[in-house]
Length: 319
Image 1 (cartoon, rainbow, N blue to C red):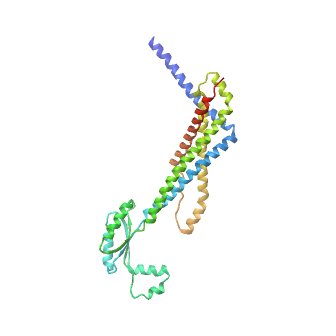
Image 2 (tube, rainbow, N blue to C red):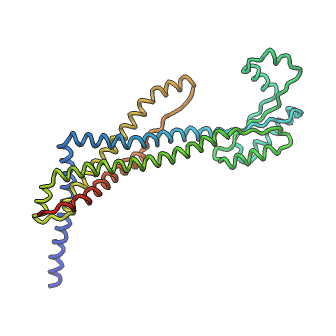
């Protein structure tokens, strides 16, 4: 008798789960059909969401590109060692080999006094004035490139160690501008974070207002559905899936807007690369960034519709 009851309960439970998931699927397709048959409202809502989300997305990519360029500058940071004027070339080259074997040093380059004077003569435009000098005023120079994985703290310690060498007159590291740049980038990143939060609230309001209008337009339908015994959860599902579709389509639209904007910039950037013999490459959304954007916009759509439905659905009761 017990076994018979268990067998009867299992099909009943299975039928309930099947009906539950089937209704979710029907609600998903029904909500998609609703926004498909209201193209004007759908296009306007999706366009507004896309434009709203494209602004923080565009700022994010801009900072990502600037950060990449700044990282290249950091990796190419060099320490210039101006040696004592009384040091002969043989001793200077010996010092270069010593510096090259120092920890956290990637490469070194030796520039002799004669080579430095010749380069200055060619680039300064004071060739005739230099010819009148009785002696070469420039010292031997060693250009040191720190290891690529060295951070600011390591580089500054290396600078102090090289400055302490008795043969070194001046050790120069011009990184103050780079530190300013990173500080500005940090401020910009926090600003983008604040902007993203504000625009996320804007998307919630847009989708919430759209769902609220949909609830008002279907007021009589909701009343009749409640009269025949439908629960709030049953009525709520199509509206939630409607917000989900708005968020998903808005996220895809924002991605297309940002990609189109960066595609428009790529041509003048290529011309700039040719003019300055540079190798600047625009960084666009990676697959990981795309997934985060679409997931965030979809969750915003679902959250906005949930807030709107929770607030307005309970106010509709059959009289």
